Image 1 (cartoon, rainbow, N blue to C red):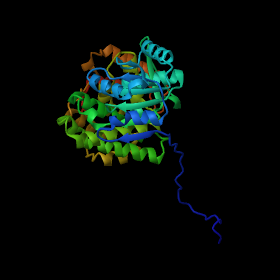
Image 2 (image 1 turned 60 degrees about the vertical axis):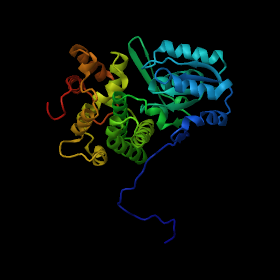
Image 3 (image 1 turned 30 degrees about the horizontal axis):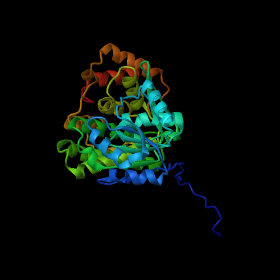
Image 4 (image 1 turned 120 degrees about the vertical axis):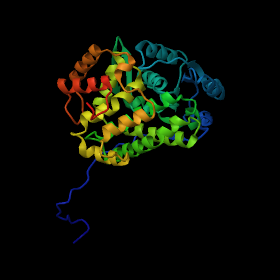
Length: 369
């Protein structure tokens, strides 16, 4: 037998495709001090600095001062869901100063605005995340216009460099820490049950979920505890990386509708929807969710109930009704959801969409309704 002779076997061979996007990641306490070096390594001469509104204004001032003449302009005010008007104005500013790079400081709103500019101009992004949104590791963009949120994927919007500084997360209030961490956990869940996700993506998702579920309660309880904050930040990085390599399912589709059409807050909405989206998919995605359940040390109450209990432990909102959404609008959101073509383990038909949205609207513990 030669080394090239095929061997007959009935064993199942693992086959997959996994792309590795080129993003440089720096994660360290005090890493914000590396931003000028990172800009220099990218050979940028004039950047548009996006973000650094309250309570990050002092940090934004610090980074702007460190960058000095490299900063051609600064946009401090950002908004959730990236209004088209804000994206248009930011793009005009980038062109006016002849920017050759974008530095985004903040959460998903700041990074999302930078992505809108990158999409229109082709400029690259250096992201300095201060929440657990995960947007810094994805090629996903979104904007809102006239009560409708449009999302898409484009490699131009994926940051080429990400600087994680755990010290920048210690100012997050407990409530924001909770919902932002649960938002990241939702990224892990959807990546874990995407049928086309590679084994590598699933490993990232499961490990990210384990870190987030383990350390988020401690990070919420003590915002200055750097070990917990660092582990949650790393888990959020893995979550964003996994989502960037997977398709978004019913969870993200519903949250985009609730945010773009009904104006619900981004991270808070993700935190509420998470256990109900899992309950919706649990039977259809049982095998895919098994490693995730093991990582979360799920007991016999089930993974959806475990995630609901985690939300209660960290003090997250429990229902869409808490945001002022009416029952009538919940039904409208369900209709919109059923009209979307969604890659999801369980088909999203009108009856199922209504079941999911109304469960999240009422906020009862999965299994108790």
